[in-house]
Length: 487
Image 1 (cartoon, rainbow, N blue to C red):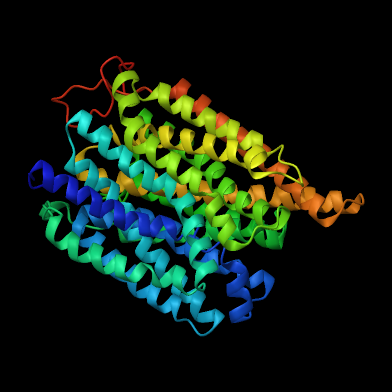
Image 2 (cartoon, rainbow, N blue to C red):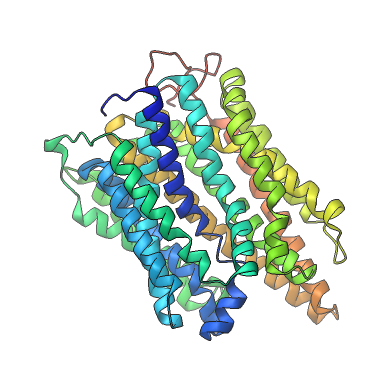
């Protein structure tokens, strides 16, 4: 990658983060606006879920392929193409006259989002090789990845409450145009290795169809039933396709995903931590918004404003605290503390009552999650990317994002299923509608807390970050960490 001045590298970071923030926002910004969208476009209750699911389906399915295309065609080129696709699709969504066109637009948004997210992290890792700078840069990117969900709920509530649901999509247009123009100017030119520019088409098809099939089974599990023939058949097909993909990668001359990457201890462990962490985070944002709306009767604007404390605290900890903790204590201590605080946040929400008060029953959990997520996300990303060679950074970035997206989709589906089952039992036992809903949310929050705590245990016990030295371009952790990145 072309050497840039310090000022140029940080400008490039801000452009990449703004582009990725636009993508991350879209995974949560629609949640608060769903009732308005349903009313305007005539969605049935079951079809309404596809406003979210269509995005998750294409986003999760194309992350790995997008990451590999970044390595082969150039990360800058793929990033700009993704921004264009996402921006055009946002116009289509904002002006959609029917439910069908909105769902199609959301699917195209997912494609563009996959391209942007899969290469942004790789570009950042290439821009910052000096340990202290890399830790600081990853703190900024960590806030975008973890805080984007909270900012999305906030922005969705404000735009829907003050204007209309159309603006949650149209707001992307000026941002997308600005990011594309800025990316042309500040991102370094792609440096490709000609002989490596081959794509494993069979492997790409297998893993993309496998991921899309799995996501489709997961997001439809609540409606069809987790033990229904459709769900089990789709999950089984997804597993078979993934097995075929692994077999293909073991023998392909130019594999889409070299299996030796998973021989790197930190890469494998980070994926497990990422899946558990994303399951807890996705569920927290989704269920907390539902608790505020359906139990405490907040309107869309109130819900958005309720997430302000989380966004502010998370931003401060990601941008000002996380990198300093990493440089002083290494990756594992801040990761364990941050995930443990997030688990405590979810545990507190699992006790939130029907007549909860914001200051007593909501705000403490909001603040704890802001601190925990702000501290933890940077170490998770550093651990996942630290052992990977530069020419495979795009692929590794795609793997990281895939684990978060799949973990989030699976976690959200499972926790919503737990919540629904618990609410149904309470209704059968004679509880009121609001009490039954609250009981379901409490059960789901408790399981989410267990996921976050398990992520802390796995990361603390199994990660083996390499020591950080200023002349090690891949070393993301400080001196004093346990030596031995490989098993």
